[in-house]
Image (cartoon, rainbow, N blue to C red; front, side):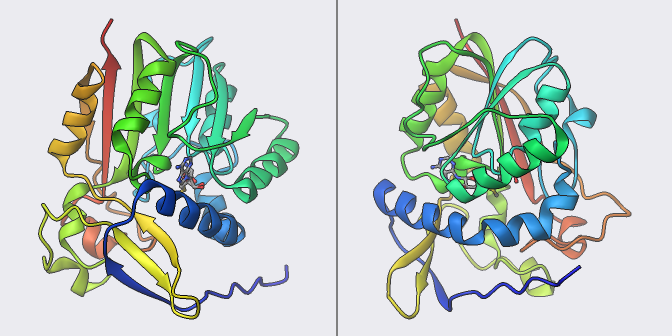
Length: 274
Ligand SMILES: C[S@@+](CC[C@H](N)C(=O)[O-])C[C@H]1O[C@@H](n2cnc3c(N)ncnc32)[C@H](O)[C@@H]1O
């Protein structure tokens, strides 16, 4: 098979404020640009009809975080190519995807056709969900929209609005403690150099245009719990997947070197109180 070559525009990384409009504009363009490379690099690991919660490779089949999905209405926010929702549909759930990136959703359609398991998907932002109130039993995200959004309160209130009372919300994000370390999979990534409590976003700026080209937002564990409490959700489970002893995959800043010592992924599981 022909080797694909991906070209990256030179960027500089810094910590600086970025509001919701700037975050969304930058991340939409970035994910449209990066989608082909992302799917070429990680698609086999994710599995076309597969549900992993993070770079450790821990699966929903192992963790059972969503509970029984059969006959449940399930929304995935930041669904990318829909691998997780396809797994949900394969298990008998009614999976629906939502993603900011049209190119990611084109990959979703490609895999729908290849596998015969289709995930109805919509292009939009998790901060303005195009669904009626109380439409879903479960809303989830595997490293999807949560850490790309500036307006955490708006996102959480949208999730609470579309969930039915007693419904479940589960999401994985970069483990908040990782924000203390340089995003380096090697030894330098083991030395704490930044304050855990510094919420200034991580921003990449295009060297040629000086435009913000990518944004991630940091929240502490306390921040996430407060956001959930603020929309009448109760945390019912918190999972920090351990790095498997035989797992040797490098994914960005995630590696065996770091994974054996510090958690890389945090999974929050909450229920909407009636
Ligand atoms: C790391 S990928 C994860 C995708 C998928 N869950 C997976 O495991 O491959 C993050 C996804 O979040 C999407 N995203 C970023 N900001 C978003 C937003 N505000 N609303 C919805 N999706 C967003 C991106 O387009 C991207 O597809």
